[in-house]
Image 1 (cartoon, rainbow, N blue to C red):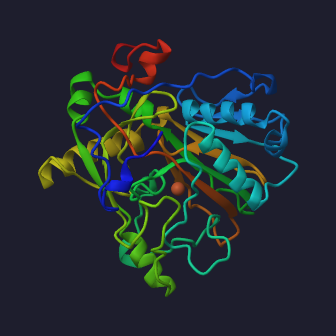
Image 2: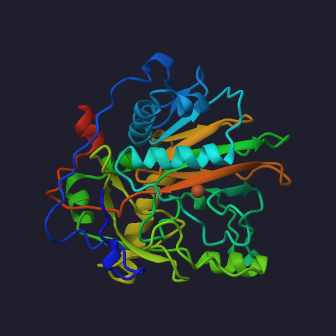
Length: 355
Ligand SMILES: [Fe+2]
């Protein structure tokens, strides 16, 4: 998964729609993790392990074999959970794991530094707290569904996999996280509409982090944020509206309500209406989502190539605490002749409209 971004200005994202197709060669699962009897939580998303410690997989003699399978599973099921973990993952383990999952599936092993992470010794780990992204009153929404996003899509080279573990759970309960499958969102499109969207790119922006930094009274982190293409305070990128996950070879929707601002090839009004429909596919379809209730030391590992997520802010105080590491993947890619397929097509499932 070599990236082509080094020759492009940092603000410019994918121009992959034109030119020679890079043929996608999907990785197939081996079944080496099946002995731990994971359970699929919904047909579209989520696989859960309860009988194995994630840190034991990381330190196993055949760790590379196990973690490659885990990475493939994350990209196929879009999110994987480890529950009943006796041993909390350390920050070093989180980072080692994130790097391994990326490099074992073709990535370069870069970890992201969030633009709001400044002044801390280890800025490759993001502490997750309730008030991390407190907004000014005029930016707050009463609609929880506005929080659906894919991590850091404002970066020219965004994330392939993110890992989050919670070390403190709200006493009041709550704080669940929801994930949605970008593959299944794509599969809800009629073929003609999907083909039309496959010709488009969209602008993604993290401009809200300027305000977050201002509220904190700190500057943004403008040095290299993991990958050499991710730097400066512009926080904008152009990516294809439909991308192919290079690990699975499956097509997914790659626009999200938090960061995607407009479809480049359409007028302002056309873009707003089309994006609103695509966001509705994510927000309103609880049959392509999975909702996860956290216990202490649980770990969630998700594909930022092919999913969306949204935390449920229904708890009081700041007693939901966790640590996150974000691996950087390749530059979002789409080409009609790259060999990408829909997930339903690849798995032999009926088309949504024909079920
Ligand atoms: Fe996120």
